[in-house]
Image 1 (cartoon, helix red, strand yellow):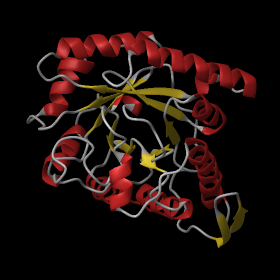
Image 2 (cartoon, rainbow, N blue to C red; image 1 turned 180 degrees about the vertical axis):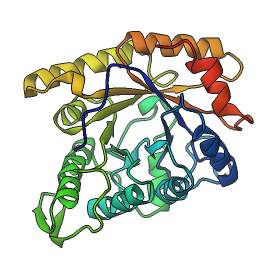
Image 3 (cartoon, one colour; image 1 turned 180 degrees about the horizontal axis):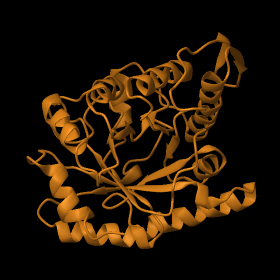
Image 4 (tube, rainbow, N blue to C red; image 1 turned 90 degrees about the vertical axis):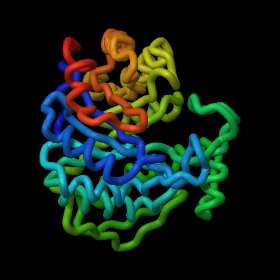
Length: 305
């Protein structure tokens, strides 16, 4: 979908989870990060209710917030880790993404995930009941079985490619049907923004191998370094079966930053790089310290490959 990424060096990004934190605080971090060359990209997420902490806390909708930040930054690549494929119809998402790519002058990375599905308690490294249950009930959305969620995601990828490369097209899938779909203006990036697919299931990794420019997975504390490395080997196996060079896919991982112990964060990052991950997203706990972007560059990124 996009020019091949340089996977020979390690790039760093930041993630500001828009939960229990103000818009102004997020904006301040992004504007500062935009001036720090060691930070290549910045990310939000895609939830509608808090998944941790007070249930009545504030949380900002991801794509509208992303559009506002895209208009105020100039250098950072940007996106959501990851967009829930269950919240917006695929063609609506494609139109939104095209608009944000235009606003940002071609800096969008489209991060996609299956979204809310039926999962047992504790799945995905989040303790307790599946938080998507309450979230989807509150917003009138429906959970689906994991297999259906994956099938819907595959159709979304096909729809996005059509919207961004064809003047008008129809689509007839098992879950989505489109007639006379147009998308103007097209994204600045041609044939479209890089596609990032997030997750770690074996079937999802096959979709990554077939279509993604970037694979993203949560790292410590949600998944161990060893587990991330094992999932990367599964991705490699899928690439071999499909005849794709695994080196074409950027390996992206999220790491929760410790403000109190940056040495521990540096060590975790180094282990992930040794395991073959070449895009590290540093997830920032709230509240954000003043000057946190420069602090990350000096205390965590400095000295890494």
